[in-house]
Amino acid sequence: MRVESTRNDRHAPSAARRLTGPDPGVTNITMKIETAAPRLEALGSPSRLRIYRLLVRAGEGGMPVGGIQDELGFPASTLSHHLRRLVDRGLVTQERQGTTLVCRADFLVMNELVGFLVDECCSRPSPSSG
Image (cartoon, helix red, strand yellow):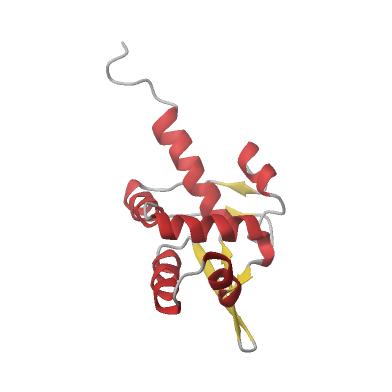
């Protein structure tokens, strides 16, 4: 996967803006089905989708792991497992700030995934239409 960006930060400032159209600061977004499928699979778990939605709503500042746990009520080991899957798939980043681990949705990856779905799944005529 190759992504070229003219922006310094990888996080878009507004969820509404991110989902309304292409990001003008990102060009040559290409995602292969081999990359998209595991990311979509990771989001296919209700627990991971709840975590991801919470992080998207938290914006570019992200949320500490303890805040996620307080908000969703997951046991620490369960939350750790689900976060690891999201991090491994590139959907979430983690940054240590002192003793706090802050998680953030990777908005560039989210936009790539949404773009993949729109470009590859929604823009072509179905085989039965002819």
